[in-house]
Image (cartoon, rainbow, N blue to C red; front, side, top):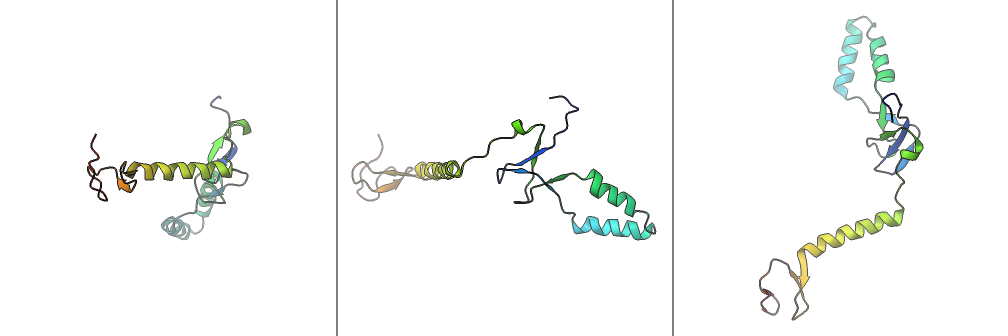
Length: 130
């Protein structure tokens, strides 16, 4: 892909959707106050730079659905395929399973759930060191 290729296809990785009408990031109140002060002090002439900045220079980079940053691609083929709902659910289950497996095991003698860091079983008193 050359440097002159314009990236015009937007995609939100958070909600996994192609974005056809991205939004601009809302301005913070401090910046509005500065612009209003500049417009009033310049007798209205600062409205032109403000409008140029807001609607020409400031790019649309926000997802209209989840308000997160979007990514741009040069062609529709470059956009990653969204995961199926079941794939997201399975991925969440696997992550939860890994988190629980890291901290808990079962005693080989009484089959009670215990912490991995334990040297002896708190239920039956059996030594867990090998």
